[in-house]
Length: 348
Image (cartoon, rainbow, N blue to C red; front, side):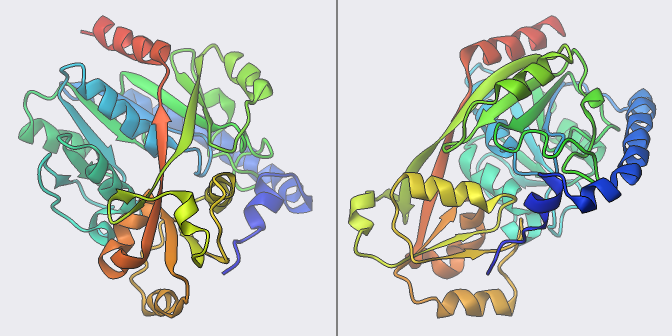
């Protein structure tokens, strides 16, 4: 399967199409500015602290790994944490549901969403909710966990009907601002005017990525605090056990993923020297439950299918023996954690 070239050709770079759509993007950007100003006046505030982690772009910045890393860090400071995922393209997307109570997984990936289940698998004793009805999620969390200290909202920067104590906006150092245009002419959901001096901006450098001093200067000009965050390729896992790259040199491997920017996964595999014979690239959040996808994977003649953690939660039941998982480890700088903890303490 070939990855659609529309995004890199027209949204990450400027083209005849992006220029022709530029007038429409000005209208859309104006609407988004009005929306942000109007909806924030009516936002719901729960009795606990709220941290929103999102982005300005359409996807692929790595906000979910950062949100999970933050949840882990805060839970180690004797704080009661809950985590909320939108549940994009899942059966629970239009609801508010507890899908992990800190002990038991209460829903499958196709029901709750791949990112919600991925968080549940990695966050141990942190409750995980799914659904884009964030106000209802907050009210449910208040009912189920009356002593909750903090709710972390993954992918909520544009969800303005709920108040937040800290807004964290994540940028991929490679994607940057795309071609600089807002939808439909570019890759941005909103312009830089959406970032306030109270925001925290994170420059996320993925395993194969580079620093982006130009983007850092642009974000600093908004008055927001800017921090650099790095992710590194972690372990290669087979049935939960680590396996060395050298053990795969004589094996036939197919790269398999359904993420916003599959190029990042492919480059990470290449950097580690993982040998592979082909790639199977699906749309972001693809469920792998349809007959065509299952038949394609069953017909694959490789020894292993190498996938991301996000895809593993959807595939593990049907292809467990054949799956390799390339994990990613995201570490947050100490000064960022001190900034967040200081802001939370100041709001008590």
